[in-house]
Image (cartoon, rainbow, N blue to C red; front, side, top):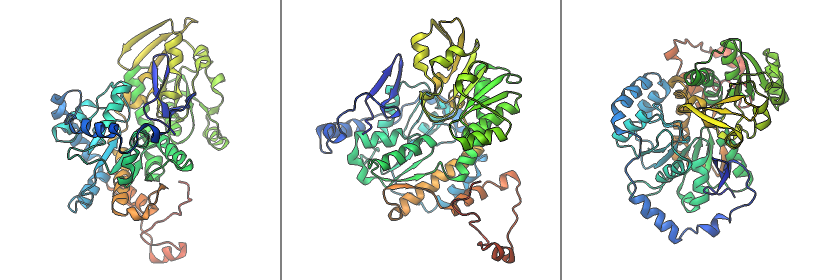
Length: 467
C-alpha cells in the first residue's frame, strides 16, 4: 500500500511517502487501523471538537470578497452552472471535501493541496461566509496533513461522502488512514495529471475503493488550463519572484506535454532561447517541429540560465545538473510535487543559503556558483504569484462541478474505476465560455450534419479525436 503518514526524510526536505518509493513498507492499513478500532473513535471525537476554520487572518475577508466578485465576472462557466443547477439544489446531501488550491477562484469543507498556494484573503472570505476552510500560505508538511484531516468529518458529525481532489493527497489519505469511510463515498473527481496517474495506479493494483472521474483529461481542462493557463502564470511567477529579463536568455523546459508546451511558448514569446528535454519521441518531435532544440538535461544545464520542470515526474534536476549551471541560474517547477527538483541536494551541499524574500532562496554551491530556487521547488505560479487566471480556471472548475454532479446523481453508472466525462459535456463547457470572448459559432445545417453523419447539436468529435 501507500501509507499516508509515513515520511521519507531527505536533509531538511520532507515529502509524503506516497510521492516516492520507500526502502521499507509500513504494515498494511488493516493491521494499523481496523474500522472499529479505538483510534477511529478518537479520530471522530477529535474532529467533532475541531475549530470552525483555521486560516491566516480573518481580517482579510473583505479584500478576499472583492477579489472573488472580480473572479466571478471572469468565470462564465461556473456562473452558468450556479444558475442552472443552484435552484434545484442538485447536490443536496452531498458532503464534499475539497483538497484544491485555495484561491479566489475556489470557494464545502476545504483544505489546500499545496503548502504555498493558498491566497489568504480568499480563505478569509470563505471562512467569514461560514465555509469550513483549513488553509494558509506557508504551511509545514505536518500542518498540511492536519488541514486535510479536518475536512473528513463535517460539523454534523457525518463523514465526507464526496471528494474533490487535486494531486491525490486527500484520496490517498482516506484510503490509507480511514478505509472505513470508503463505503459511504460516491466518488472522487481529480483535477491534475499527477492525481490521475495516481488513480490509475491504484486501480491497477486493486487499491482504489471508489469511482473516480478523471477531470484532467477533459479537453476543456488539459488543453486550456494546462496549456494556456501555464503560458501566462509561469512568467507571472518568475517575474514577481526575480524581475529577471527573459529576452536573450537560454531557458530549459523539462517536458513537452500540455504544460510544457504552454511554458515553452511563453518563454519564447518573451524572447527566450528555449531548449526542451523530453522522454517521449512523439513529444520530442513536436517540440523540434515547433523550432525548439531538444536535448538532455546534462547538456542543457551547461548553458541555460532559467530552468522550468513540467513533467509530474521525479528526479528531473539533480545535483550534477546544479553543479553544471551558470552562476545565479533560476530553477523552478510548475509540474506538481516538489520531487521534480532535488531540493535535498541543495539543502545538504550548499555552503550558504540566503532567503532573498519569501519563496526565493539563493544557494551557494561548493564550486562557488549560486542557484536561485523559487517556491522551494513547488509550484512557482502559485507559490510566487496568483496561479492561473480566473477565465481559464472556469473551464477546469466547470468540469469539476459537472463531475461531482454526475457522481452524485448518477452513481449507479460509475462502478469502481477511473472514468471520463462524456464528450457532450466537454463541448458544453467550451460553449459556456464563448460569449465572454465574443465568439460567434457557426451552426451545422441539417444537410451538413447528414453529410458528416453528426447530430446538429453535437457531439462533433469522436472520443479518440486529438485536439
